[in-house]
Length: 115
Image 1 (tube, rainbow, N blue to C red):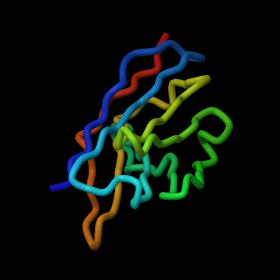
Image 2: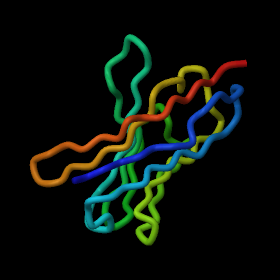
Image 3: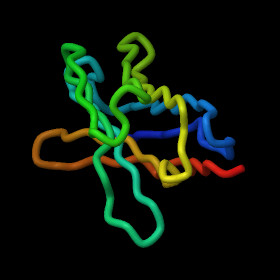
Image 4: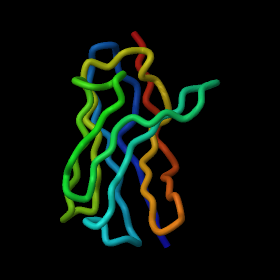
């Protein structure tokens, strides 16, 4: 059974930083691409960033230059470092991977950017 568990969310002021973590189990982590998504109230879920099993990264235009996705295969963990946070970054952030035909999601972690 695949499990994804996020942590690291919280309340931060505009311009601040947070590091999100997603610990995985039930998969050979190093074999899988991983993504971060976010969903703000009233909005559809939005893809934020992705990292391939080989470490190639991609970002949504809205976060490029501010967010960094990385992975530690020894710890079965994917990270999202978020800098220069803006109020519009407020959302529930979830990690995601596809195993076979199944999409696997974590429960999400809340990020709130507010003065």
